Each structure stands twice: as structure tokens, then as C-alpha cells.
Length: 96
Image (cartoon, rainbow, N blue to C red; front, side, top):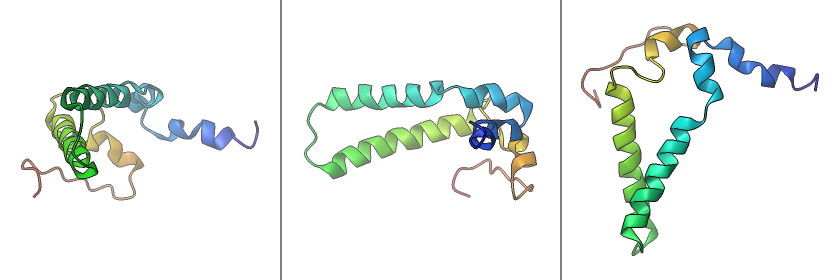
């Protein structure tokens, strides 16, 4: 137990407002549920590339939603204190 203490308490290095969010796996469980729901609709995929394309599109859609959501899960600005690069720039236009 004593050897694992730094790993168990690693979340304490993050800003206080993020700690409760780090305990939860709800966002990833919701994302996995959405992937399952959409792949079940398709049923049978012709090949692995088709699966990768669909799951990739779902992940890109979710990433865009998380990036522009008004109350983002964790903002870049609040993560700056724990970043190696404290200068954070968030482009208003994705991909720039």
C-alpha cells in the first residue's frame, strides 16, 4: 500500500475543480454506449476499415462537441497550471 500511495494520490496534483471529474468514468462510459448504439444499428460491417471509419467519425464528432461545449468538461485554461506548456491557445476554428 505504501508503495502505491503516489499513484493513488496522483489526481491531487490537478486543480481542485477537476478532481471530482477525474474520479468519474461517466464520459467514457457514455461514449462507449454511443459507439455501441451506432454500431448495433449497422449490424454487419463489410470489413474492418468500415468499422474504423464509423467509430472514427463518432470520436471526431464527440471531440468537436467537447471542444465547443459552453461548459466544457475540463477547459484548457484550467489545465494550464499542470501543463508543461503553460501557454494555451485554443483556435476558434478547428484544424487551425
